[in-house]
Length: 135
Image (cartoon, rainbow, N blue to C red; front, top):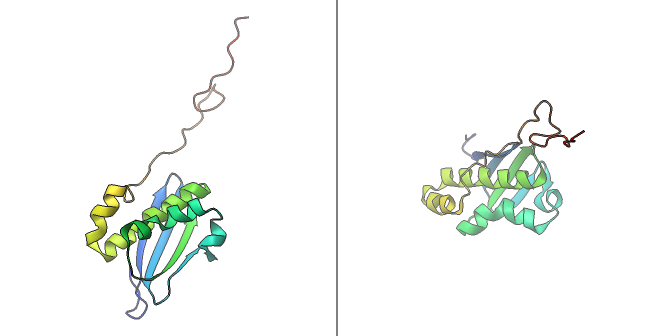
């Protein structure tokens, strides 16, 4: 969870569908947000995805600056943004237990467990049957 006393960080694991994000927050004088060694504005090109990833900090109105580093893999880009939000929320709760109720009401601490249903034998997809013909 933490390294040496000089460079302390808090880690949170976030998941959504098949996306997994490992989020580390370190107190810093200047805030930055990097995802897979890229800036958030480069990794998520739309403002909506950037807002989803950063919403745990913006909704709780935390004034502290953090150096946030994320390693994310799997899933689509939207699921990755929500996995980052989940991991960031978990890390913030470890840092400050008082914001747990706020994040819980917003649904940021809940993992979205939905998975793609497997394809069944004799069907085209999970539930789509081949076209029925009378003759």
